[in-house]
Length: 96
Image (cartoon, rainbow, N blue to C red; front, side):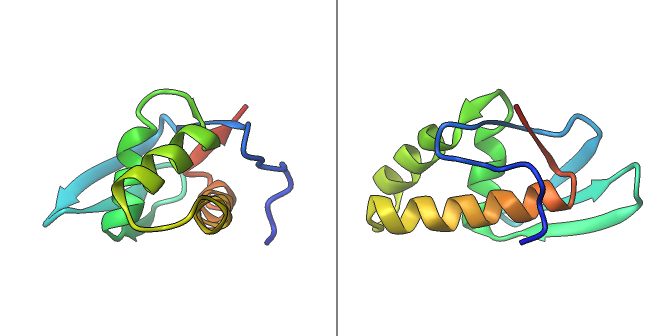
């Protein structure tokens, strides 16, 4: 993982403002307008993206995911943190 800012379960995350996203058959297709790069998210990634329309903690995301999907909290936290780390690397989210 190359992200330099540490993302923890208590980190506050939000979508980056300059990202344009569209829904395509239940999945998000996004473009980083500053870099001209395209990204696509599966159903779960799209759900996380939708939740980040306002600042919320990683814990809030994990709590929602464990209610909506059949996954234990520890595994979910690990997967969500890895996913958010990749999104941060690509400058798709802000962490603060």
